Image 1: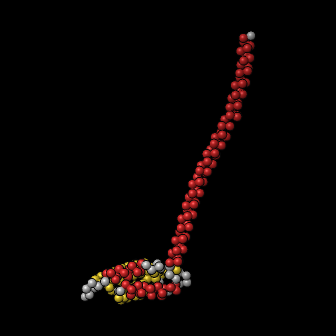
Image 2: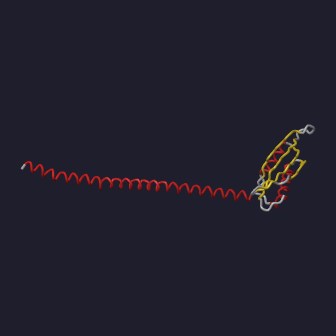
Length: 182
């Protein structure tokens, strides 16, 4: 009876062990692979959600920078002289020179240089005066609401006139390029 019991116990143990191996092979391991796939997908979605908040913050920052750039461009365009304003602007430059007390020896606008959105209008300005007068001239040019760049500045003492300086300026005046004709 003991032998039959042992053989009967093997008859029960082998199928149970086979069922356990089959369960592990056909159910448990594929389930683990599916769970691993789902965990990776969940991790990817969590990472996306976390990055989405950063992306929204970055988007707000970039939008703010673009708006600031647009405001700067609008302000810059308003401060540019128009093509029809150049003679008035040249008159303002001459008035600034007169108010500064310098003697204007040359005032000659050069040919304009058009660019895509701007026109550069060079002006050669020569004058004589004391250092304070020349400084006052440059300060007055800096206060102009239009875009005026001081491209070149040359100052030298006048030998036969004590305390006076000869000043040569090349100014770059910028204007909107809207139908400008040189």
